[in-house]
Length: 113
Length: 114
Image: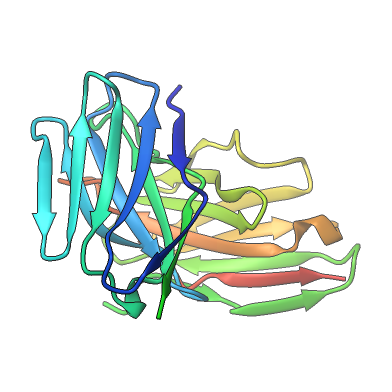
């Protein structure tokens, strides 16, 4: 089955700097890669996703990149702000075959003032 | 829609007691997932249902845990007897069967077993 590894487990960046979170997956057939954000005491919520037919996707200050050959994908946050402080989870799934999303262990992102 | 609803939001119980967590998925969603979140283990999938039928319960830690979905709008996760190591936040999530696989999470139930 699919296995998702996520690094780092904790990340601290200065406000205004960029943050990068990296994930690798094991099943080369996986074709959908969502990212969830969980603020302190709140529920996880989808913030961005990417499908295997594209290499990059952007939404304002966040972007995801996908390298299918290497089986890794990354979340990039630019011009970080205090409200970016949260736990971020990457995930992978093969749509039309699997029902359940396999989540990484999460990255706790701290934005320093 | 009000989103996924979970109750109670907080539960404190003594070891050995039975605990029942409840979830109401978003109307029209075919899938319902139960997760457990701890600092050590992250977000673990316990069980999921499709059209009220349990599909995969391989994540259920042991026989003390059971889950039911008697109809499309209600599910329960029961722990009997509860133990201190069951202390965690339990999330219910639902999604539909069309398009993306986005899961909509409920607010969670914080369980403390003393």
